[in-house]
Amino acid sequence: MTVPVSTSGTTAPLPRAVSRRYRHRYAVLDVETTGLRPETGDRVVQIAVTLLDARGTVERSWSSLVDPHRDPGPTHVHGITAERLAGAPTFAQLAPTVAGLLDGRVFVAHNARFDWKFVSAEMRAAGVHLPVRQRLCTWELAQRLDLPVENLKLATLAEHWGVRQLRPHDAEDDTRVLVEVLREELLDAAGQRLDLPIVVPREVRRPPLSARLRVLVERIARSR
Image (tube, rainbow, N blue to C red):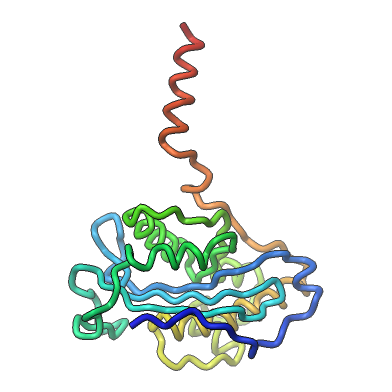
């Protein structure tokens, strides 16, 4: 099932000091997958995205189950069965929508490298450009805040800030929870005058193969 993009004005904006310090728009997301390694054939089975403006106000939310063209993997973790996936769109069908949602935003996830490698692999397989140049991991940001918690799991951070989890390991609910965690982290980080651990993903830093080949050819030509 795909939940269409919708608007929401229910989230109160954070203080202007936050947006003045961190002038970003965010795409907060979570994926559920058939396993841990897209390079060995694991696929996305569910994706959810919520867009926030620089003051942490929710602009739009969207989610979808995804047909992975294989078994859904650890159903005991994410609860997504083959029966639930019957009739779901493929990621290739969803890729243009995902690109439109992420375009120009900071890609935000908890353990963001995991979600990034799956989304980037799926977009690459679909032949659709991933229009993202910055990534923010809420786990890494929590590390900088020196919080009085025993670990930095999403469930632990949610409990610390009083955010109720309804369906752990469901992409839609995990994204809802992560939005609130991010808002608390931004508020805390701004109060401490911390820089956000925003990174440029390696795939973005690395030029396309055609560009690298062109540079190589030019170097060979100059050496003759």
